[in-house]
Image 1 (cartoon, one colour):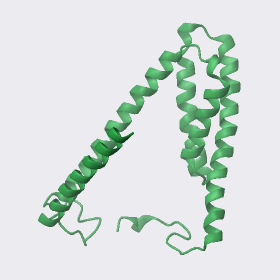
Image 2 (spheres, helix red, strand yellow; image 1 turned 180 degrees about the vertical axis):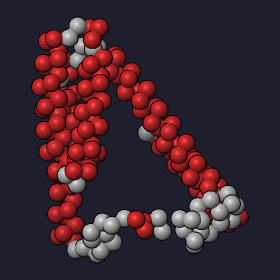
Image 3 (cartoon, one colour; image 1 turned 90 degrees about the horizontal axis):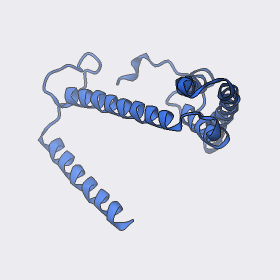
Image 4 (cartoon, one colour; image 1 turned 45 degrees about the horizontal axis):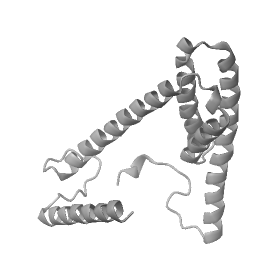
Length: 178
């Protein structure tokens, strides 16, 4: 297993329904509350910047939005142990609803986040492909992490091809049915 270095208290323990629901609502509710707080703070900062910036200085708003998004995720996930994704989504929705008119150059913000999203998506697939390549290759590149590595065999390739064909059929049905 790869989790030899994880020292999380309670990791892997069975919990009951009540404790599961409590944990779920703490994580999601905490993420929502923190995201809302950061969103309102961001709207306040955008209001201040909207009055002082010219259209040439609108890059400051882009940097603010990018920095606050990352900071929201970090604070929520690492420091508060809540859902960073819910917090970041709540931040985005709050800013979209309350500060839409305060953004000086909406096109710049939209294009910046499109480029960042494309770059991060590409990086994710490069990393995933690299790890997957190590798993299916015959060398023991991953052996130091796990001595129980089972090599990718012919039966696995059959399952992989069947899964690929199944996903193509599912995508076809979803696209043409809806």
